[in-house]
View (tube, rainbow, N blue to C red):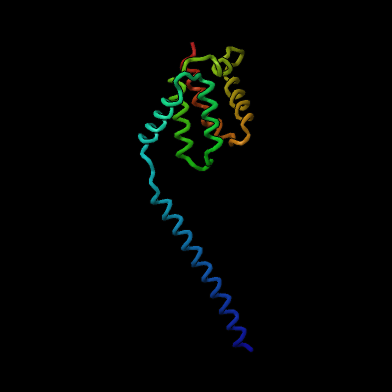
Length: 154
């Protein structure tokens, strides 16, 4: 009787040990894969973004650049830092290449009592219209528009 109980306990411990070993091996494989991923050079990301912007921007306006950037965010994986960085670089380059238009800059740099309220209001409104994009990712990307508008404001 005692021997049967010990055999059952041994089997249980053996199954638990095997599960732990398999979990550890899976974790090690995942970490190995992450560590050996090909990470692109920063210059490579800039080149990709510049080429994409140069292909997209001719005969477009700033609103088109913003909408294209938001469209790209909708299709990108939120955890994919590379695509988020490339997208923000794309937006920065696209804004510099496009025909200058007052939209959305007129909404951002309006001279009111407190012009610092305009940017967060615009970001919140624009990101709210794109519910499928995480608010933080959306706002982080659209900071490129804010910078562009303040740098090019008359």
